[in-house]
Image (cartoon, rainbow, N blue to C red):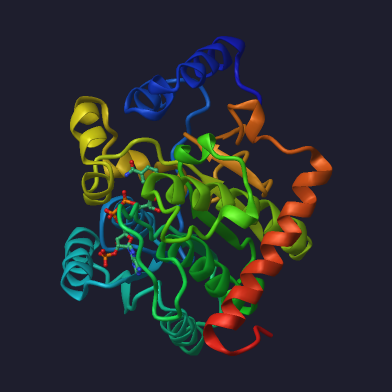
Amino acid sequence: MTRPLPAQIIDSALEGSIVGSFSRIGPLVRSRLPGWEEIPRMDGLTAVITGGTSGIGAAAARKMALLGAKVIIIGRDRKRAEALRKKVRGAIDRDAIEILIGDLSDLEETRRLAHEITSRHASIDVLVHNAGALLTERKATQQGIEMTVAVHLLAPFLLTELLLPLLRNATHPRVITVSSGGMYTQRFKLAELEMTPEAYNGTVAYARAKRAQIVLTEEWQRRHGGERITFHAMHPGWVATPGLDAGLPLFGRMMKPVLRTPAEGADTIVWLAAGGAGSAHGGRFWCDRKPRSPYYIPRTKPSTARALLEGTALYKWCRQRISEGTGRQLQ
Ligand SMILES: NC(=O)c1ccc[n+]([C@@H]2O[C@H](COP(=O)([O-])OP(=O)(O)OC[C@H]3O[C@@H](n4cnc5c(N)ncnc54)[C@H](OP(=O)(O)O)[C@@H]3O)[C@@H](O)[C@H]2O)c1
């Protein structure tokens, strides 16, 4: 949708300022610009949201349920999941939240979670890869994989692969990955993705995994776009959540007055999930309901030919790393 010139100028000025764009000023201003619509209803749609027990994921789950969707949340904490379910049931008088408990850092658990979904549901309209954390110390998973890469990349990859048959059964299936503006600092380099204990830096590991999510989204779109599935990556902005407090406490304290609420951070996820006007094209990176360039810094931008090669290489690497980790080939 083409917006009036003044609205485009205001939006671009915010984007150029970064702080204006990523802080709560972004949605405060942009939601007043012409073209900011009511999010369409989601009646009859089924959405899966990872990390639906806290922060942005919980806000997205709640909003989708209020809009009429059936929402399957994946998280590790049953108490928090049940609390969300109860809260939503109280608000809409309908049991809209289905809970799946599992740890996405474990590939076998991820496989089990996908199996539980496929055994209970015939189709899925929306899959949101939201679970994530910035880990200050390096940790390895059950399968010996660096945790940041496992949770942000391999679990979404495996879940997507295993849920593709259900996505194909939906009318307008969408896969939405919650990336981060932190990825702007990093150039994608496959060889440096899974950081060794000697080289580990939590912020860098996180930013590289978030950059890789963008590369994977573009690759998924190239591979599966012809099957009507659209793949989107998005940045929620800077959001006041337990995850931000734990991963970047100083940043969280300093930016507190201008942080977004979880609902503001979740807005673009829900808008994409509901098929908001102008969201039909996949393979893009969104913030505040608008596709944004995934590059601010020239050195992080590959040529078009190189980007294609990197996408293919990352896709193959994910398959290979999952097979190595589980001792089983992905079909
Ligand atoms: N907050 C921000 O400013 C910001 C900015 C950019 C991007 N993001 C991204 O937004 C997403 C949500 O973050 P948030 O800020 O809302 O943090 P949060 O409040 O800590 O929520 C993170 C969610 O992910 C789940 N999770 C983490 N590791 C998991 C695992 N191994 N298995 C299953 N679930 C797991 C958590 O489950 P438990 O309840 O079991 O812990 C929780 O539900 C993340 O991908 C984050 O990188 C956040």
